[in-house]
Amino acid sequence: MSEKEFKRPSSNLRRVAAVAGVGHTDWAGDWKRVRTGEKPTDSYGYGALAFREALADVGLTRADIDGLIVGPTTAYERMSEVLGIDPRWGDQADAVLSMAQAVTAIEAGLAETIALVYGNDQRSAEIQYGGPQAMGGDAFLSYVYHSPWGLTSQGALYALTFRAYCDARGFDPLDLGHVAVAQRAWSSINPNAVMRKPITLDDYREAKYICEPLRLYDYCMINDGGVALIVTTAERAKKLRKPPVYIEALGRRDLNRGATSLEPRLTDFYFSAQQDCARQAYDMAGFGPRDMDLFQVYDSFSVHVPLALEGYGYCEVGEAGRFMREEGIGPGGKLPTNTSGGHLSETYMQGWAHQIECVRQLRGECGERQVPDCRHAHYTSDVAGKAVSIIYSR
Amino acid sequence: MSEATSEAARTPQPVLGLYDRPMWESIRERAMKLQCCTGCGGFQYPPAPVCVHCLSSQLEWRTLSGRGSIISWVVFHKCYLDAYPAPYNVIAVRLEEGPVMISNLEPPLPEGNWIGKAVRMTYVTMTDEFVLPRFAIDAGEQKQR
Image (cartoon, rainbow over all chains, first blue to last red; front, side):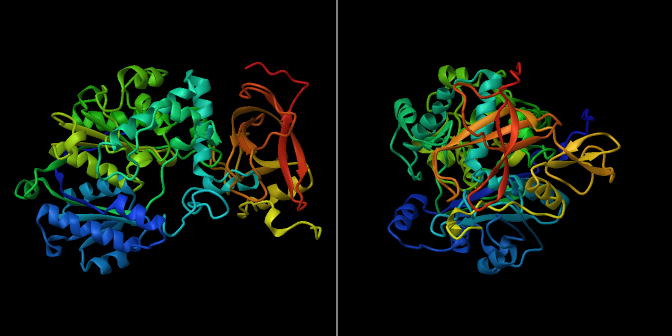
């Protein structure tokens, strides 16, 4: 079926809203506590702690918050009750869509200052993303439909994708190690990160397979924590204590046809969705990949990174391996990517921590891992074929 | 189910929505059927209430040829399910009728790259007597990639 040309997203949304405050919990400290058998708090508690930090960061109080979006792991009403706020607008959404919805609600006048709050006790609650209690079947049938044949883990879906991708694009599977190595190099200079011990390509290659061709270091960690962001109008953000980080552009394209049988993963590698999403976001911003100082990719598995490098035009199709090897995505590389360490090495906050890393890099708050003169940051996710991008600018 | 079969080794049970049931019944009879649209001729997997290609309700259950080719494969080295001790493989097969189906490749397993290998459906009875459609290399057909 040929795709018709849809109207491009409204440039009315460009720079109408800004992130004014960010906060997060003590991921590394809680990781240690959970591993010794403690239960620091629950999902609502992690969200509340992060929310408190975000309010302190921006210098606002709960009375200033008139909108609330919570992450998928907590109920909207209960989180709002725990935080002690009565919003006039609210929703529940994942990391990237919560930001898109906040901008839309602000532009529409439905709310002025919106808190985006995520909390997850997935480690201490022993949430399983593979096996008999695999998560997500109600949202993504592909996660559970193939269980009679032993396929339940989400990592296995990416392993299937990666094998077909290597075959189609001539990607050397060992080049995938550059993702894990580069992100660990970033996290080694990030005091917030859970995993900080540097690894080498040899470590990567010697690591055990989980679902071949993917190895241990290709998988994200599972840990407890929370993240919160305060988003408000551009006008109001200018008057607050931290420099505003504007939402410059948005883009989205979902591939749902054939999703359960894995067709878009195995034959398109989400490329067509990423290309359309990229066009929307770059058109809206008025600039493109060459102008980005920071690239942030949802990385539940390392595989997302080479797919995104090609899909969003950071390198030519078939060049992701060479790009990572020769140009570099780690510290000192041409395209600083997942500078916090990402899900593989910093914290698995299902895309939420990537947003606050964009904000802090654009504010210049990142210390040793700071990207020099960071002006534009591109975040992208392609969870289950939903390609979404946000471009942030200072 | 025999008494020797422990609950632990039970085959992970399939999703059984309204439209999945006739498919699993056909599998139990070792002649797997999928819905085919009498309007546009398209096959679909998983089964659905309408034709996903043209929205028609005129769907007919048709037995598959059993032929296909591998488009991707993985080997699990971690055990997630008692019925599947590691290592074991999972393959994605492009059925001759069009849809992609996830399954397993029965031995003998080929050396090297499996992508593009022609396969043929075979029915395996699991220890709990659950019948599962799997595939074996189709020796009679050296499919060119």
